[in-house]
View 1 (spheres, one colour):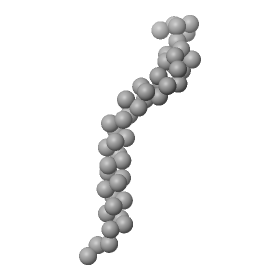
View 2 (tube, helix red, strand yellow; view 1 turned 135 degrees about the vertical axis):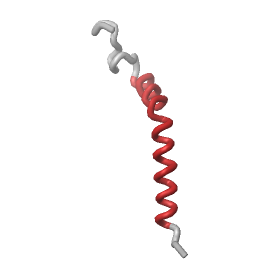
View 3 (cartoon, helix red, strand yellow; view 1 turned 90 degrees about the vertical axis):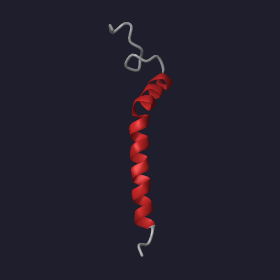
Length: 49
């Protein structure tokens, strides 16, 4: 891809397009991390018998 054909956001024409691609790429990873964090958080705030 030449410099002239690149959009302003590293090949994407709009910030929305770029965000959409990033969400798609990282969505699964972030989802997994959030599940782990939530589980740990619940374990930390739940009194242990």
